[in-house]
Length: 270
Image (tube, rainbow, N blue to C red; front, side):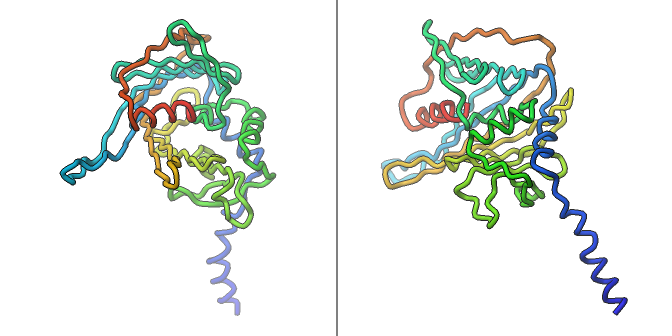
């Protein structure tokens, strides 16, 4: 009997240490601590992939890719500047206190932050602001997160239904030990997956690869859209505030499904 108890203790005893789950407030606080401090300069490429149509001869034209380059100046989740360059285009966006600004041909346009604005979820410095933003995005902030798995790691699921039926609920997944965002499923069903985190100056933990997936409804058909973002360079800067030069230039993207894909991405996720 004693031997059986010893075997059970060896099997089940160590696992009890993994059963401890921090409170949601603690998890959000630790997540915000991984957003660094001060101003960061981030360069990355955004790859848009799209299956081309079949030619008249029946030959599959394969995949068509478009790569745009992004340069970010990030002060915090509420103050950023993005410059996008590509074939014949240059778009500039400034994010300030809940609004995104862009200027084309002297006309300044403003729109509220989207709850699917991906970049800010990697730069929240204040836990209370983070919690309010998540609640506004429809994430149920329960006192205790639930243990889950994503991307091969143990994760804390926040917003997840108790019965595990989470497909229709906004849910985010923080890696349990590192408290970094590994996956965020929005109310629309769109998902952001973050991988290969690296530690940068002043405590910023930032992923090398991020993938955005969403489904576009076209009549009765649904088409999955996938966009990959790969970080090229992250540098800590010490200027007080980025210059707010807003002027953008259009062009370079021909009419068609690829242009529609790019415009939808920058409307919803940027």
